[in-house]
View 1 (tube, rainbow, N blue to C red):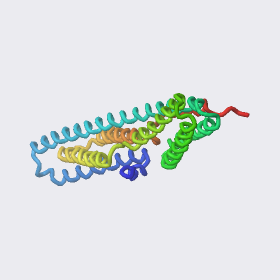
View 2 (view 1 turned 90 degrees about the vertical axis):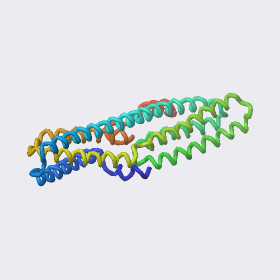
View 3 (view 1 turned 90 degrees about the horizontal axis):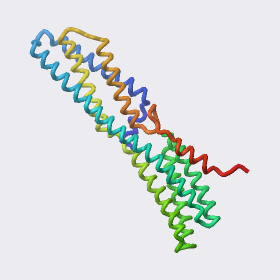
View 4 (view 1 turned 180 degrees about the vertical axis):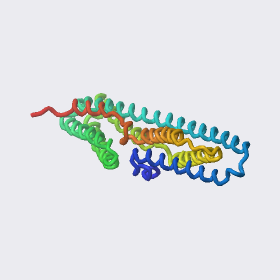
Length: 261
């Protein structure tokens, strides 16, 4: 996770503000350079810069669209895995009835704690601790399952419980991979570089034309800033506006809660 932790220290709103400021600064630099060179520029030069401007903005838009498509797919995968995990834990909880009473009660308590831990781990500040505790619970559940097999080695019912428990552990691995599968640092650097160059050329083109359409430039910057911020939002599972709905886990937590005395 270290490759993106550096970027995660910047809040979502901070990314939007940073993109807007960098884009405006790049446009201003480009404008000033063009103003200094305008007297030496011909109409062909201005036309060529306009063509380049259209191409690089289109390329940046394509790259952002592609990355948002990938990030949206990953977000959907995370949402489905959360639902699958709730179903898997629910199945394992029901199948604890196949164990002897002592092991069954022990396993139910561990599974109830497991759901609590998974819900707490949605908070990025609790993520590392939650993963560590989840894996400890896996070990405890598996030890109980081994004891059940040792007691009833030929039991089909115990085998069904172990199958459900194995699915819970597999889904943990899948969810962990889905959470850590993020937009790479190299992609963020590419987007940042292309954004700076694009808006520098926008400013350069305006400088050659001796016209500064501030409203149009600001609108373009705000739109691109919003798109890049959306990408960052989709890429952060526990932050921003695009968050996973943990309702499936909350429903399961309520269903398996022990009855009040």
